[in-house]
Length: 134
Image 1 (tube, rainbow, N blue to C red):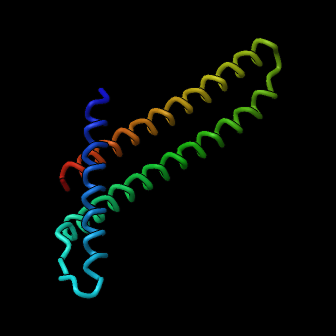
Image 2 (cartoon, rainbow, N blue to C red):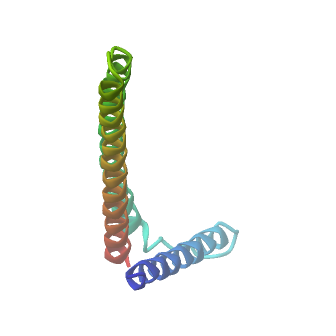
């Protein structure tokens, strides 16, 4: 299960080392008397930046939707919490409290499941971007 993650991290590390080497070459080429060398990774890096910006934008949109869902569910639960106090009998109070409790935890469950799915999607995209650039 963790092998693809470690493989992606390894490839990302290799790419980072390559970028550092190219950067060092660029710095050395700025010294007087050394021939300039064009970076070979520049087009790949620009493509990576564009794709990563798209991924981050998508993640932010999903997170915004999640926050809106949480806010809406929270407002509904607050309204139901006020209705709990209107119970006339102990049995009705217990039933309303249990219903409110269930709704709250269903909301938590949906939120965390959505966050987990978004995290998995982000890691998948990250792995795809890392393997596509190497």
